[in-house]
Picture (cartoon, protein in one colour):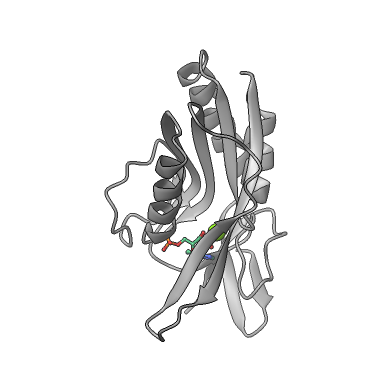
Length: 178
Ligand code: IMP
Ligand code: MG
């Protein structure tokens, strides 16, 4: 059993590089079928989705474009929480089929934020693809179209996901050992 250490925490391998590669092939195949006659813009959410976006996009055989945005958090004027703004838009998505590429969907809060922005910018159709999904933590009713792996409600790193900025370069996914 492969174990690694990042900063003060230990993690155990949960999803191998090979399993991820195979699953992404399946997702790409579904998307190649579903989105054949659409004008597709993939929208990767930085930072976490950069590896998933690269691997999935490379396996699409339909005409498609890709763009990236980032959620920037800043403190609100009141202490009641952070406000998140999507920055880095350089693509006109009006009338387009947008496929959001997320690293992981946890509570769904981030997704709600992204969805609102896409609706505001008048995408004609919105699909969600995520490498990982924690159904036990999910609090939204936005439906997820392409899910790589459903995982337990535990903290994971690797394949783009970080612990305090580290671990994104791990080719497999690792779960926190309690
Ligand atoms: P949500 O808004 O609660 O769905 O959270 C989504 C974001 O939280 C993801 O894009 C990740 O950046 C982060 N996140 C959620 N779960 C994990 C995890 O297990 N490891 C690393 N980051 C996570
Ligand atoms: Mg993220």
